[in-house]
Length: 61
Image (cartoon, rainbow, N blue to C red; front, side, top):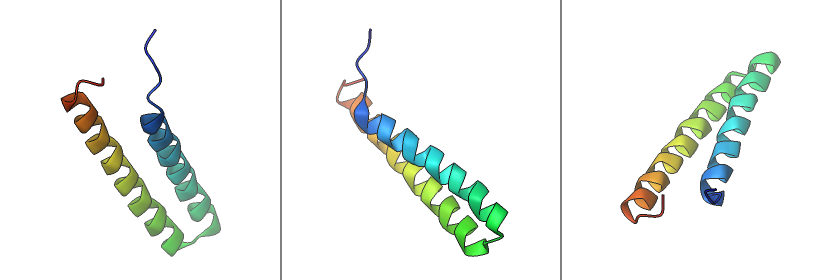
């Protein structure tokens, strides 16, 4: 069985929280909240993908 990559798991949980934040912001009708959560989601996903690429380059995946 493969080991858990904790950093990638944390990024995934943070991205899921940002998606939930978008839903909450829509329910609250907060434009700034929606924009903030979308920007957070984009940055978290970008960090996750770059981290995964670096790990794959080092042979850790």
